[in-house]
Length: 191
Length: 277
View 1 (cartoon, each protein chain N blue to C red):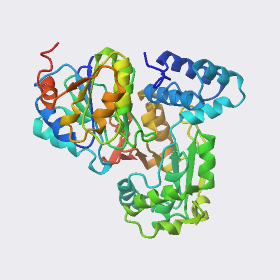
View 2: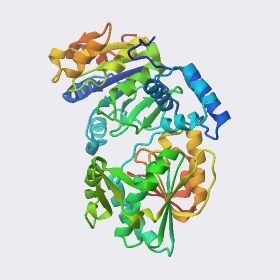
View 3: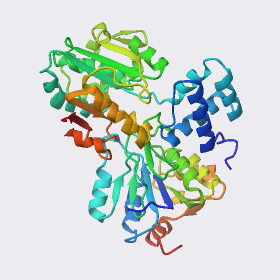
View 4: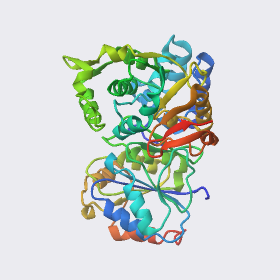
């Protein structure tokens, strides 16, 4: 397992699961980045999403583990009930502090900490959701030189989150679902 | 760089400097803490207190007792009674029967914060009929958290969510039997408060102080780097009697540590281990 020098972040809440599953499904066999997903979800359904996706797609999809190296060609999910952070030595850490935007994991927390470590090697996607989590984080990714992409609110099941992202940032790229899926499909062909 | 509205970012070098100053003027050494989490809390502190880095360093060095207040605010003190109810069910099924074989039972709740976990354990021991011969030590580095823990008083708002957790542990009694409500708060019954001693202990610098049959340290080690985790695990190992139990948080495992060879996994999902050599 090799440490990733690039990270792709995906934040989503209500209404984003189907798109997330679809874009993970379209990934090429090998890609250079680490992909890291924060999906708001109930603590009761802890690791079922990773397990079922991992089984279905036969890929390295796992919950992010505290102090684990962030590796290429891996998809990580933030575990329910904890904030997920990126450390300066390119490992993950978990944090059980207060909810942010009524959420733990909070998209803002991952985006904010990853932005400061990976800087221009950080790409962040904000998808459908019913609250404002992720908007501030997205603007921080932008401030630190990363690339930000927001799901077209017209195509989002619930547009509150992408709309908040658009309002909070300077120059976001707003993409349709097909564009988002094609980005993941063509990973490693772009660079 | 970050605009004013979301400002308050400090550099990791600034964090190192703050850690260095704190280490020099107090006994608290935060150098083994996870950096990103700590940095966020420093930034939050600056934001709430409307201070900048210069003010902060100045206050730590020159204002008497400020550093105690600062450290207290940096440490995460989020906890609940019966957090992860399934863990308590596992404790009841897998650990309590073993504890019952001891004439005297000593338990350590390490990083006890405001005391909720120590009291939850006391209630569980009571329902298992072994509270009388048990004693729980709760330790933390935060004087403020220890003070709350000793009082055993929690807001009714919190009690409401603690009750939901409690009901999921298939308990033998009503949660309301364990506390007395007054106005908008509840005090944990004296039978529990008299069985728990809360005192100051620093996992980073202090040593073993007793031998225990059960050590609970849940959601504390995630704030430590690997090196410090190793130190703390050795401390727990030294503090456990042979065949004693170690309970970590649901995302904290011995998996990446050599010391796992001295433990048997009792519950993989909830990270309960037994010292076997």
